[in-house]
Image 1 (cartoon, rainbow, N blue to C red):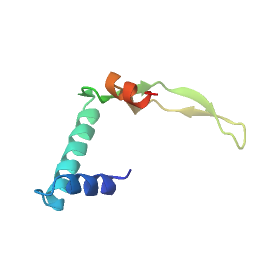
Image 2 (cartoon, rainbow, N blue to C red):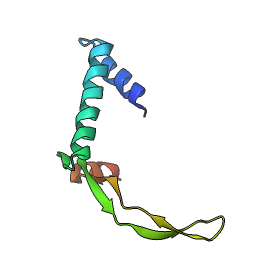
Image 3 (spheres, helix red, strand yellow):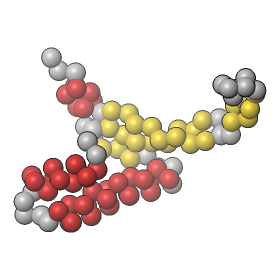
Length: 93
């Protein structure tokens, strides 16, 4: 599902809201999550999961084409851990 599809689905389920308002709400939520992660904060949505940032240390890598050793700088990556309710819902028989 894309962001546009999410907005359409939410607008259909909430006919009392204009689609442009739903779009603002979804965009605001994503922006707030992104801003929190950029600050290094953890975002927890109970039952759904938690977003956090993990640090990857600098290391030596290898260029697959030439085999030459290259330095790979330290970087931060987003990480998502599913919540218990989401895991249970995905794994029901």
